[in-house]
Structures are given as C-alpha cells and as structure tokens.
Length: 112
Image (cartoon, rainbow, N blue to C red; front, top):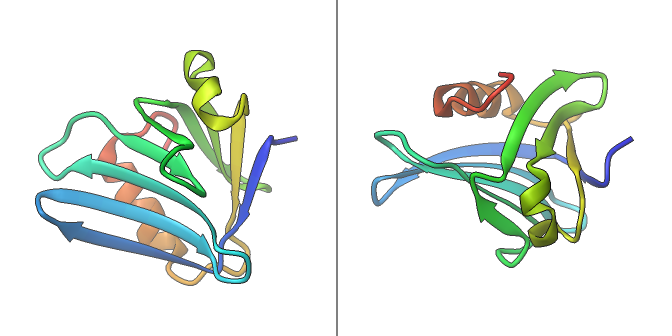
C-alpha cells in the first residue's frame, strides 16, 4: 500500500534552462508527480501535487510493477511529503509513460 497516489493520464519530458523535468499528470484532478535534475546530472528534486510537497534527494528507491511506478521516500524527507513514505504513479492509462520512465532511468534514480 502506498501513501500518495497519482493516476497519471500523461507523462512529459522537458528540457529547459539546463534542467530536465519529468512529470506524470492526472488531468482530472490536477494531481502530479514531478522530477527535476540538471541536464549534466546532480541531485534530483521530487515533488507531489505542490512545490511545498517536495525536496531534493527525497527518493530512496523506485520500482515499476503492478502498482505502476512506486517511489520510496527517504524517511528523513517524509515531513516534506505530509509524512508519506511511498508514492505510486499509476501508469495503466498514461500516454508517454515509457518516455517518462526512460528519462527517469537517465536521471539515475535508484531501482530503475
């Protein structure tokens, strides 16, 4: 079971101002999961639904499976995410999911 869920309708990968953004968005209720990293590498910023619910180097691990993309958060960062420990991004009906997952692999997220 996960603490937060985003039922992604589409994924996008954008490079702008030297940063790579990978987003998974639920178009119905404006929920999203967003990853950001400098193009040359470095720490990954992760946020869910609002910039206030995000942190740099918050991702402890990732896995793709029956729940979709499951992100496990570092316990020390849980306060930034309403004390959630995991986030599931449902990918069943997600347009562009493979491109989004490939971009996350290029970011070097653990488990992908």
